[in-house]
Length: 383
Ligand SMILES: Nc1ncnc2c1ncn2[C@@H]1O[C@H](COP(=O)(O)OP(=O)(O)OP(=O)(O)O)[C@@H](O)[C@H]1O
Ligand SMILES: [Mg+2]
Image (cartoon, rainbow, N blue to C red; front, top):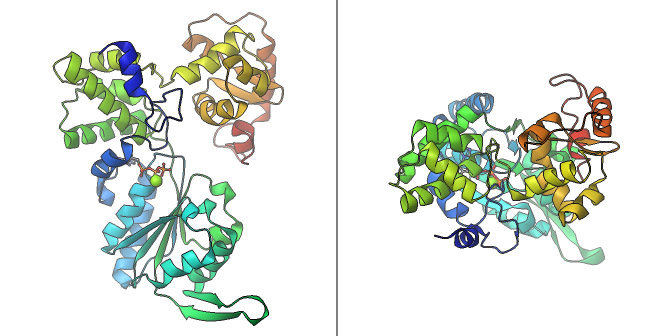
């Protein structure tokens, strides 16, 4: 396969991603099909997220012992870390059916009333992207969660009547990538909230090993290390990279996923050692080469990359910030020492960027201290 053709195959089939992001955290292309086969089905198959696993295990076991549905469960965290997986596990562990819907699918309170009133006793209702539900439905959900009752409005105008309707005891499992966008009253009605965090490379290695076994791929230990390092702490990305490296190993080598195969394949797909792709490196490269490492304003930086400011801010920056390569300071974007090193450039001795960075770092409390992570300082206020 020539590189140009490999590029085309790497292209996002939805055709919206001209950067062909193999490291996108959201599900795309063939992910949805493969993921169903790779999802852990039981709590003890779930890798990493120790605390969540233990706490959730207690919640579920206690409920089973009482013979009563557990409290409502909220799962929050960035895409691809296992929210849907855990929702399915909850139903599986409880031995109950699960109904799956999502915020955007519920545009009217009536949509929700129809779902709620058709649930079976004890059923799990999985509401994905719960922060995108319509407001009137949200209010209906408050009452349903608390009192297992909804008011169905019949008729219109002055003659309209609210008829109370009892609904079965169900367990709501809500998932959101933007917990900050959930109104307080909704958040408060969840008895258990789990926040999923990025995985350590060693955990990603275990996930890769498990996936390789299920996909019948021969993955060597060093191959696992190599892919894990480029997976951005995200199981979904790890599984996707594994499949691309497997393809490469099958076509160009003996099918074994070694470190060598991973390096060659991911060089072809332009995913580097730290999991940065072309867009990430374009942003970082422009920051270093055109602006001496910053500080530079977002829109100026975006123009230099030939991208929308939004794309730079929402698609590239969160990972660059998390990886400690870029900082958002009040005076603009600044490259860190690690960024210069990662791109193999020498930082200017007296870059103005350093002063801005040092000032900004002083303003952020140290890791683990109150106020950290200062979400809006790191990522900009959640819109
Ligand atoms: N702890 C884990 N152990 C093993 N595999 C995992 C784990 N977490 C996630 N995965 C894998 O990653 C894939 C993506 O996970 P999942 O779909 O649950 O993410 P999500 O948080 O729901 O993402 P989104 O926000 O896009 O809906 C799953 O198919 C699963 O195979
Ligand atoms: Mg999901």
